[in-house]
Image (cartoon, rainbow, N blue to C red; front, side):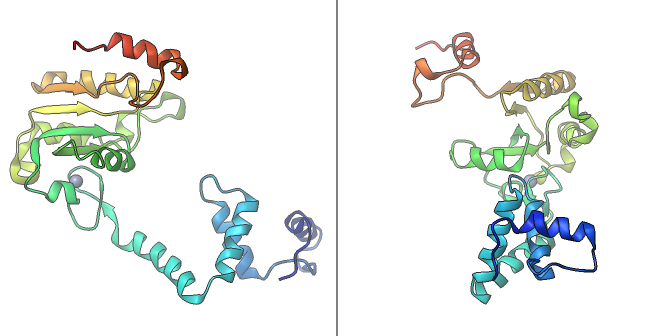
Length: 229
Ligand code: ZN
């Protein structure tokens, strides 16, 4: 493959001048298309997209087809759990399907990846509710854009839950950010009339960290939420 020091800007410039006359340094259409698709991914700039496209180009056919098939499979087989909105490959996710879990406790998180992080601790044996975001007035995201209505329904109408289990406690596991706190505040008020226990994850110093490197906000939280020995 011919490489010029700065091929893309030249190609774009050439295209602008005369779209019918492709310059000699243009990539084949399929390469351009793959670069454009990679460049749409979060955190991937034009240069990285190019590097990834060339990696695929150089990879053996089985590896490249494996990547393509994985992309097809994720769109065809993965969906949202009808109960908690976690990722699932059937109507219910693996957590909601697990009858051994305590279905009376629901831990509310922003994203499926938060759920997975909590699952890795193996400390929590209840169910989850994935909000699919957090309330963000600046971005125009309100409670109606999240899965709050289903959370309320799960509490109000136990018949819609796996095993028709009534919910007695909701743990708010939102990120300790301005928007996460705002969302937790909103949920606390919205769920207050439903006669269930509402708690939130503890916050403060992470294990293994050092006081001198902790931010003021973390230290303030740690003092405020101090525990008896
Ligand atoms: Zn689920």
